[in-house]
Length: 446
Image (cartoon, rainbow, N blue to C red; front, side, top):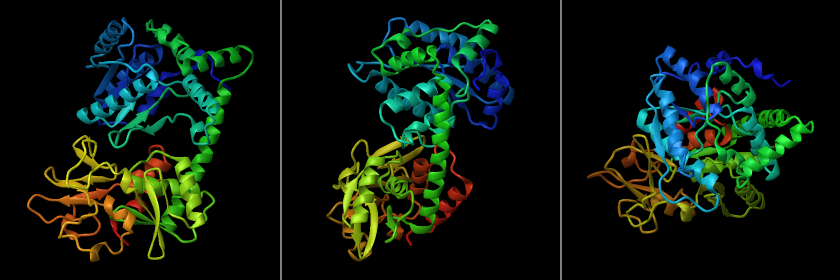
């Protein structure tokens, strides 16, 4: 039963914020009603808990008045004793896909600021209305069960590896805009209504207006939120079943490959394959179509490449490995600019390996092996995987390959546990799975 506007209790939101500290938190602040309500509640919570709260105001620069609105939001935040940050989106804006580009800019901004300030959480003011609109849009686009789960109240920042270690929390997700605006009015608060919210050029605006018309004729948008919860429950069951299958049938190998069982026939095999693809490719985002192609090739006993991973057979065993043609590094001993991603004080190579040692060089092994790498040590590695293996050169040391040669011990860590967890679970995997997977991976090549 939907809550009436006056039923909103800010203490419910404060309780949801408990346990987020003591690390600093970022808060996305636009000056609109939703983010203003979140600011009022979170500011009091942060002050009481002694947790640094940093409002982040992003001026997209697409309207002449946006700079004044950003300054106004910053002034309100300062009245709470906070130190807001205004980030302006400079330069030319795309002629098409503006909202998608703006979202990408926001995500990268949050990731960069989170690592700069040591923040682990980004608070966003998405509401129940936003959830209904998201599910409606994904229905319109023909989204599958994962898409129809909508947004999560707790989720990982959807950016890898830049967003590694940063979570998004949406404590207003089951509260309506109407409830928040009634409460803000009671608090004698003002907010800014962005005219872009009425611009029918944007898909979300058109869908928002469609839902408003349907609601006026008796349709309850909350039914879409209820639908998302049902799909979320199904996805959780599927993810946990896939996690158990990974634990019992797959082997994670320290050089970055996943050995598959010869008779894999799990009920949720495509989801299992997607998680294994995530580990091998360094891309934790679910790629259902790519994983379906890999699964069908596996059933047919044929090699295949999809979603940044390659399915291959070597010595009568099946493996998922990194597609060497997709690796973001060259085989000539150098690295492309995108090869290393700085996630805080950590360097991530090709989305797969965390690199220790600031002066350690790393590149693809390629086809011309250095003399220190013998053919014998690579004999157990599928040939298709070898060009994409990470070759490390410690300062003054002997070149080596993580998971294969002893020379690279402690210099690189394969991020398979995180990649699999992010693929299967939105933010916090079950403790049994996280602990067991880390224990299994710690054993290295098996």
